[in-house]
Every structure is written in structure tokens, then in C-alpha cells.
Length: 387
Image 1 (tube, rainbow, N blue to C red):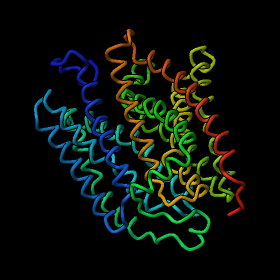
Image 2: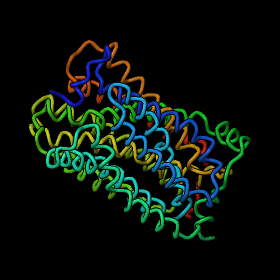
Image 3: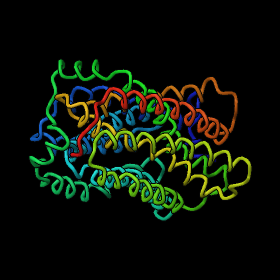
Image 4: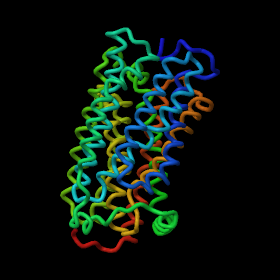
């Protein structure tokens, strides 16, 4: 029996209902964050992080206490506060000459955390007979103390120096007029990135939400460590690639190179899937690693260094959180639409088959969108002196 298959109260899979509820919460949070994160001031950041995480944890407690199927609503309230966390944390890091290194570490920790929490959750269920309904709350509670310590440490990070500001431009809270000015000034290139990210986020979320089901179909089930092992490779390799951009001081060149690497990662996504299907790559573990690497090498920069460097080039009064949350909002809309398509339109029975087809589509659209963005920004951004 699959995960949550014991609940048959809906016309569709109960797990799909849970995933959709949480995704709608995330998406709602991202749309709210376009305004909230872009207008954020430093004094509110640490308390907002702690409060939002506690609300999310309380929602998981409600998920455990409220009987299924009615508890699906609680996952909406879990996703709603969590969608703000990335913007709050990244606001500590942006606008610095070391932002790429810091953001690469942060991004990789998020990738690794996805696999580690799944591994911890499965371990708790197997070793301590914790039910699938209590497991999310128990797992989250284990990480609360490290969270509080991490927020305290994060709040000790000093503000960007004058040299940072000269190199990367000052980051300020934005008004509605500031937001309009930035969007009107660079909308074609930004739109191409957002369209690419629409599909890429949906693909990443599908891979993440249905990892257990995909592993079952390719013969990697039964080992709780597999979640962490696959994501460890993705996290480490992504970290090394993204952190290396700290060495590129010229902002325009950094934008061009990162978009080029993102486009190459789309080729890796499609190529690894093709080789797996053709039995040239016969180890499903490494296929999952390569697919994850292809997705995350393109995914991570949008949430961190790509908009960080674009703002440094364009020099508008702005902050990276504004652009990140526009992209994230549309990305989660993509995730929801893909879930609805797979549930109500797609005729196949296999999650793996849908995942394979989706990988090809994501790679194609991603490559085209990134190619357009490369040409557009190369033309509209004037030659940059080395920062």
C-alpha cells in the first residue's frame, strides 16, 4: 500500500489532496510576499522567522490531531507561513560581494534538508512506530532548537559594507512605484526567466513530493537513507558550482555565465533522462542524482544569485526578494497546475512515466527561455566595469 492510501474519501488520491493543499498555501504565501518581503525592514526579520515557523509547526500538530480526511486543510496553513522563510533569510545575505558563497551554502542546505527530513521522518516511522500523521509534527519538533540557535546567529551578521554597496548596489525597502519602475525597465528578460521557472519549480516540486513513489517504481524503496544520499550529491555539486561565482567580480559577465550554466543544466536534465531510458545509464540512483542536479543548478540561481547580480547591473532602487517572490509565486502556480493536470487530464497510471515526460518538457522550455534571457540582458545591460 502506498503512502496515505488508507484514505479513500476523495475521488482523487488523498496524497494528491495533501500536496495540493500545501502547494496552495505556498503559492498564496509567495503572492503575499511580493509586497511583504520587498517592503521588509531589518528589525522585523528574526521575529518573523520564528513566529512563522511556529505557526507552521502548530499546523502540523493540527494535522496529527484532526482526523482524516478533514486534516488536509491544516497543510494549507502549514505552507502559508513557510513560503515566507526563504525571502526573510535571503534578505540577510543579499547585496554583498560574498553573496554567492553564502547563498550557495543556504541553497544547498535547503536541498539537503529536503532529503534529510524525509530520511528522519521515515526512520521515526520505522523505528518508533510513529504514524504517518504524527511523523511531520515530530520531525519538525526535533529541529526547533537548532532553528532558534540559527536565527540568533543569523541576526549577528553585520550589514553590507561600503565596498559591498559599491560592488552590488544598495538594497532598500521598495514602494509600489519602485516595483513598477523595475518591472517596466526589464520585463522581457524577466518574463523569460519567470516562464522557465514556472515549469522548473513544478518539476522540482513533483520530484520532491513524489520521491517515495518514484523510488518505489525504480526499485530504490526500503532504504530510508536513500532520500538523503541522493540529495547530498545534488547539494554538494550545486554548492561548488554556485559558490565559484564569488570569483567573478564583473556583474554582467556573472549574469551571462550563470544563465549559460543554467541552460547547460537543462541539457543535463534531458540527457540523463534519455540515457536512463535507453539503458545507457543503468543505475537508477545516479539517474535521480543527475536529474536533481540538472534541475537544481537552474533552480538555485533564480532564488539567489541571478537576481542578486541583475539588480547590481540594472541599479534600480530594489531588493532581490521582490523578484524572487514574483518568480516563486508563478512557480508554485505551475506546481499546482501540473498536479491538477496529472490528476484530472493525464491518462497514464505511472508516476514515473509522467515524471520522465515532464523532465523533457521542462528541459525544452527552460533552454529556450534561458537562451532568450541571455540575449536580452546582454543587449540591454551596458558593459560593466569590474566591481
